[in-house]
Image 1 (cartoon, rainbow, N blue to C red):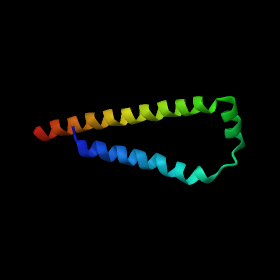
Image 2 (cartoon, helix red, strand yellow):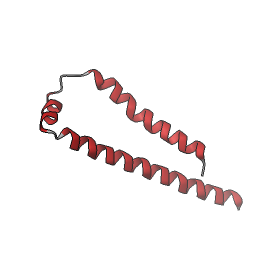
Image 3 (tube, helix red, strand yellow):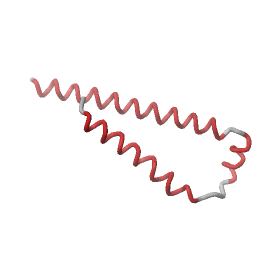
Image 4 (tube, rainbow, N blue to C red):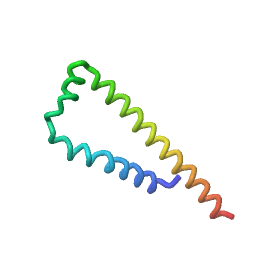
Length: 77
């Protein structure tokens, strides 16, 4: 397992998804979000997005490990 590439993948993932949310955090006049928050639906949206992002992260880490394993096998030959 290449620990350096896993850390790199996590860092890129975090930066990719944190910067747009930080830039758009200054907008407070979103009527749809207020309606969804008052109905309690915003928590469902956040939960679904969290599950999707977590599954993508797990998928990328698994693919990275498999590629590293294949690369190591090819280097041995």
